[in-house]
Image 1 (spheres, helix red, strand yellow):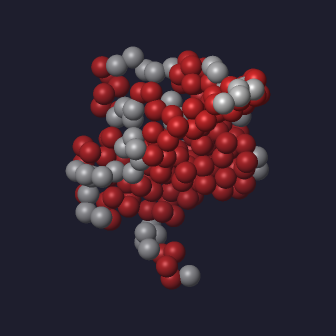
Image 2 (tube, helix red, strand yellow; image 1 turned 45 degrees about the vertical axis):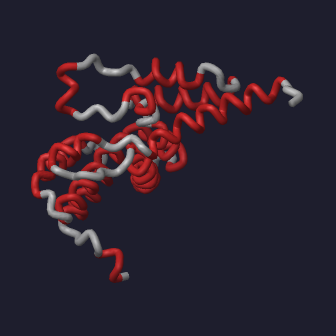
Length: 191
């Protein structure tokens, strides 16, 4: 097999794609504490976060595509750390997303690596409207997931709902949360 210089770049991206595939198998572990035996994966969570970030950013006058990009990368480091529940955090040093992302992207072509690192840094720094919309989307997704689990019989999900609602900063995310709290999880079927 003849190897060309651009093949190493393609291999690096393919390798990252395989690593990111782990997010489809990494479960959101905090839900086990309330008896959810098969919680959603980090990838499941990240998809809806990106979708919500798009809608929130559009309503807030921010760039929806940028907010979605930040959201889709916000938990990508969990391929290396797993999903650490809040109850474990007092006992562990907080992982540094920028450091993990730098390791994950070290062999990528320059532009791809720079783009991913910039997205993670922007999300973590929370200095832009898009980053704040993506962060709110993360909290809102958790709230919506908690409502779904509560509706499925996991009555101890209320703490996730309350904490997520308190963490929201944008007017749009707050309005969506309030609507979610009074809307049937099956309301979409009646349209």
